Length: 477
Image 1 (tube, rainbow, N blue to C red):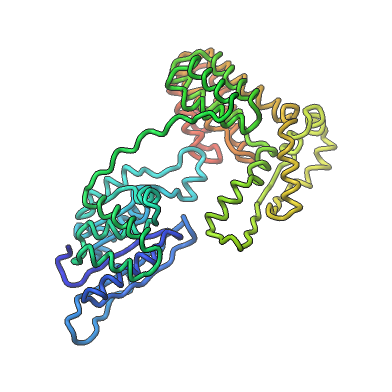
Image 2 (cartoon, helix red, strand yellow):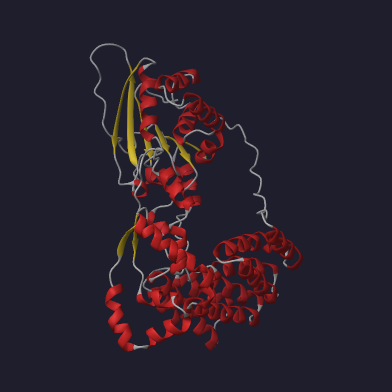
């Protein structure tokens, strides 16, 4: 509980998380319990590039002139900070809102920033450093996965945060006063009270049972069960989860025969359990490379349209239009053609010169229009002829070369070679850059003079920047 009459609270919330509702509850809580309260907000940029800061200030109403309350939080003068996501708790610390007078209440889950998603490798910021800073800088830090609690209770994260605020004891109000504020809001009362109760218990240290490890994916077809039995019999336990997911992915990507080919390749590796586990993961990713057929298939799936409607909270009677930005290169178009024809066009300077201008600019494609939906659906249907395309032949040759390198290497180096597949991802320019970096590293490995540690260093250098500057310096060193 604060040691002064004036109470200052900052709430940092992402778009769509109900930060405004939470701020309203807190203001109503103060006003209904003998305080003059005021709430303001400073909006951030859309979604994950910035949060909205809601600021609530309240003071006990002792009569007389209405006190003048501040409009924004002042660094070093905030009693309570509530953050809806771990990185927002970190931003509150950086902004100086968190001090030794502050109770910091934050969700430990992550909603990744654009810069984290677009990194060449694992661009995630360190959550451990933020948690450590929260404990060090704040008077008290209460942190748990509020998003998971909201999902488990069928509520929203704002109600869980409100419960955590009540359970923290940071405000001089009884639990029933918080619950009355929710009821006064009049919306989704039962669900909000469930979330509130779970948040209150978590802040009070009531332990939940440890989450069980997810079950291994269960086959849903006779072919899937046969392949699952093969995985259990032929591969070490460490590789089972990735191999089952790999089979599931490749049956969806192509067919059962392609999934069997995946298992054939894994069994021929005959490596250590650690190498086979990593290979099961990375081989499945490489074999499900993103060609134009795959991209078209993913764009027109009913599950994708349903997910987008859910994300934008569209009602059943509302129409949602989806516009994609696509920029296929000439190389990708030719690689979708039958291999002989694709090779002939790419090898012909004249044909390449004539066709290249048609693929220099991106296109805005409205996948919810009949025209583009049918065109992409037809392209997705080319999956049955994928094995005859130029891209298929190129990727299978690259995969076999990679697996040969892994088989010939010592276990430690084999593991690092397997992990080099991380460089190969996406499509278009992203794929070309990653493949180029991979080939530069493999060329150095073939030339000799590089051990497992050197391979690891080169891979991390390649993931450090998009332009390959760090990799170039590492190769020159």
